[in-house]
Image (cartoon, rainbow, N blue to C red; front, side, top):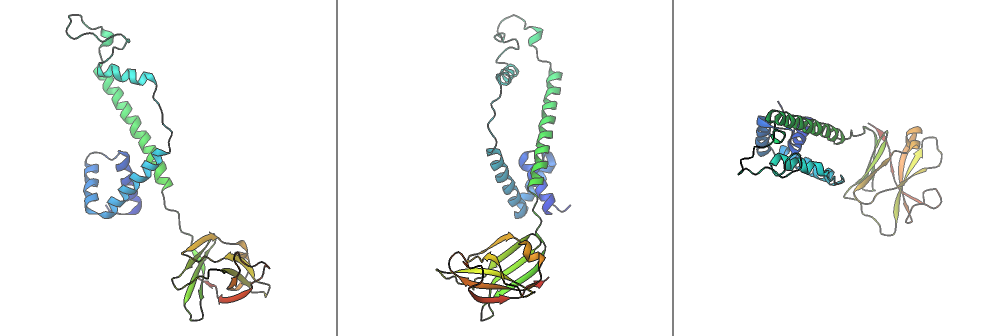
Amino acid sequence: MNYLKEERLNALAAEYVVGTLRGKARTRYQKLMMQYQAVSDATSQWEQYLTGFAETLPPVTPPDSVWESIQVKLGHKAANDTEFVDQTTNTKPSRDNVVDLEKEKQKRWKNLSFISTAAAMVLAVLLFVMQPVPTPEVSHIAVVNNADNTPLWVIEVSDTTMNVKVTDAFVALADKDYELWMVPANGEAPISLGLMPEVNGDTRATPDILLDQSIAALAVSLEAPGGSVTGAPTEVLYIAPIVSV
């Protein structure tokens, strides 16, 4: 069995942290943590996630009956709320105060079964929540180069997102912004797609117009801070073809 597959590793790590992984399986998992960094990292991630999840839950104060039941089971208090019979006296305890071991054992197994079921349900929910979000498939790409043919931005377009990455070659101007434009293939005026990022990059929703119209190219213009105030590009610096992949 390949324990390092992401889905199986996540399931085992979650069970280990929640406590539902027991016996030989738990011992085997502890050995895997010592052998593989990926297993150790997955366990640490689940510990952090569940700790954060637990901290978001409101505190619950158990009713007094719970503490009374614990006192009875520990022998600190009689079941009828009277003082427990002194062991040094000859008085025989009432049959009502004698714990039925078989019933007690059954009750403990029921409690363990309930806890295991609840933990399994929580685990199933958390596994669903932590499933990695599928990466949208890129359908088009454009690379914006400068005059030296050095890439400044890389634009990846899918049906849902447009990811704009800034390269290390880009140097921003303090008093200017860069704006991205779509140049329609039918010769109509360029349409603004928003400002270009100047650090790292960003991911935005793909504009509907970018999917609906035939595109001749993408263009980047130099603008005053905030972008063009006229609705048209001021000074076009770069033009990049958009290619289907």
